Image (tube, rainbow, N blue to C red):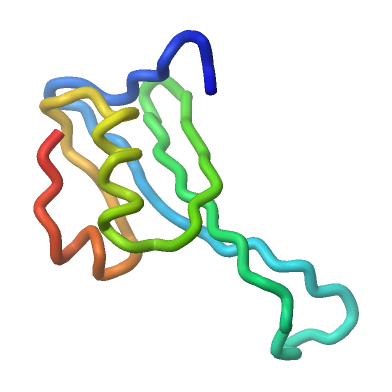
Length: 93
């Protein structure tokens, strides 16, 4: 953890949130990998050009919402182009 907590966004500001899977695939393109998938979740403030990225166990709302609440300043709008989890839940920051 950082000694100084990061604070992204703010009143009237937009932050972008997204997730991605990291897998090691070298020569077998399209091959079903047996290795466990590693998910990362990120929050980015395009105005400050700062972001936060974190490894997560899953993409469920119960996992992602506490990260959003910890990193994003209240009173902002979020851009998201991913999972139904954030579309179906109301995140109050």
